[in-house]
Image 1 (cartoon, helix red, strand yellow):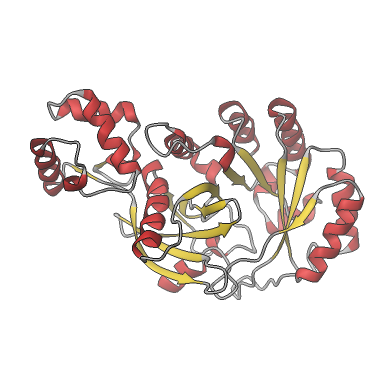
Image 2 (cartoon, one colour; image 1 turned 60 degrees about the horizontal axis):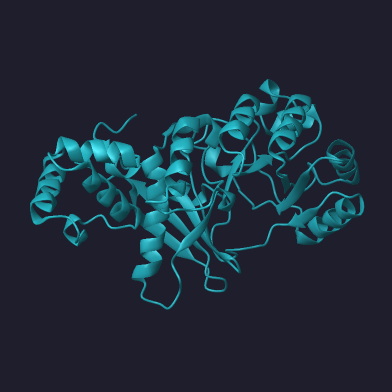
Length: 355
């Protein structure tokens, strides 16, 4: 872990109780600190059920550098005035930057969370990979994105509900390349003394790291799984997604079927439509052939244009045509709702501008 100081925000409740004991306090005080932090309160003076002596002790330890709160701050934000989508640039305590997207739906608010600074997967159409891989994020830094986004929306002083009740780990990075920290983050979200978020309100996306798909199904059978698919031939997929060279399509789809057999939960296949690359009638026929009969849903994504990649999206009209064909073939499909049309749509773009 690159951060040398302990981060309070990433501690489990049991670790926080041990931390309180180190300070000479009863373990239940650690539980109280845990709950305050997960409410987004980072000023110890606002933790009103702690004794004054403990608050002073915590403040002194923070100022001395014995530990840090962890998490992140909002360094920049772009807001779409039409639909309320906000794209955040978060700055970590290490001065690294990642992105997150706050989205409003009928069922509540969702945040797209980053799991790494940069990415090592090298997908050719993705802006996040352009700067290469820097490091993994800790569980506390992932949780910090949720808290920072909520606090930002709350501090705007509108009547808008800032509460985030759905999480999608689909931001910068490959979550399954940072599995231990990802797992800790999901458990922190679920902890009843913290946010008490249902596992069914969480979704994790992977480019297809097969061994971790199996582990994920064992560890988190109720968390939703999304697989970035994008092509249905090994040659084509390997060209735009290098991970396919290690875990080719047959291996990936077999792992997906084992996952659905074990968890009885539907997989979402993410399919970014790239004009002239994967949106032909032949490509649709391959989708129907390879995905037919699976417990799955196809999420068609008109690709956001990224100048550096040379790719452009197919457009929503073509996406709707493909969705209709898949539906007629018995494969549930939708076109991803277009949010944030006034802001940089591609993940990684705001960070690239910062650099």
